Image (tube, rainbow, N blue to C red; front, side, top):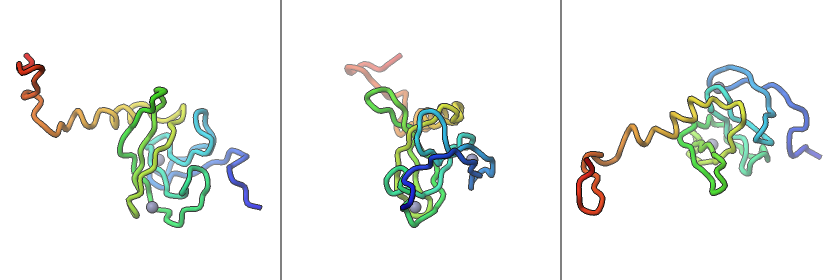
Length: 123
Ligand SMILES: [Zn+2]
Ligand SMILES: [Zn+2]
């Protein structure tokens, strides 16, 4: 019977940046994204099942926050465009996580100087 989850930690080589990382880390039970570049590979349909047939590279595109304050890293497969939310791990690159979280603020979809509150322009 196939194992559902990794029992033993093993070293994984990142398909994107080629650096190695452990399959286990605090904060996640079945990590497959790289803590160095945050890229992943499309292996799961449901987190940990390893049943996806795609194997496309998954690009980190955003950060989301759950109601309990936990951060989720949002990945999109470059091959089939599926979106996945993944729990972040304790050793994920904080600088890359923050740059993903700040990205919308660096590229506003509307002119910031035209934001108004209650009809008066913010000074
Ligand atoms: Zn990597
Ligand atoms: Zn895919």
